[in-house]
Structures are given as structure tokens and as C-alpha cells.
Image (cartoon, rainbow, N blue to C red; front, side, top):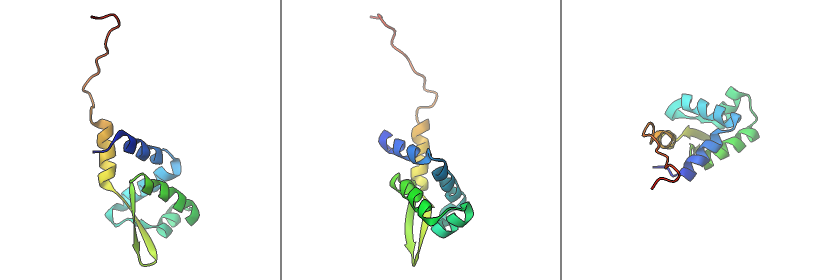
Length: 104
């Protein structure tokens, strides 16, 4: 189960338009993932820009990287993605009761 701090880090990483686009592309790529060159070609981004944004996604735990020879394969960590969503919806519709001022 994710902590509130880990969830906040994941959401902050996804809160940037470019990183959200990269993450959604990797979700569509599935478990095979994509290397940096493929991501850059698909999104029209320079490798240095991608490295910066992928680093933030990796730091947040949303993306894993695996070296395959000279290439680095990037994959969504679906467990972390699902835990993030579960944290956000864990207490959905349980209601909130506010204490009334002056009530004994």
C-alpha cells in the first residue's frame, strides 16, 4: 500500500504535461516498454529532454528502466500505477462527518 507521500510524488511527476504524455505512451506500449529513441521518435523530443522527464518518472516509481545492451527499456510499473489509483479511491463514498461547534 502506498503512503500519502509516495502518492504525492507520483502525482507530482504526472502533473507535468510532457511527463504525462510519456507515461501514457508507455502505458499504451504495455509490458514490452519502449527505449528512449523510440519514445523520442514517437513524441518528437530530444534525448536530453526525455532523459530529464523519464528520470522524474523513475524517481516517482512509476517507470522502471532496464538496460538491454546499448539501449535502455522503459516500462510502466503497473503495480505502482494501480497502487496510486487505489490510494486515491480507497475511501470513495464512505462519507464525511463534521463535528459541530459547541456540540457536547
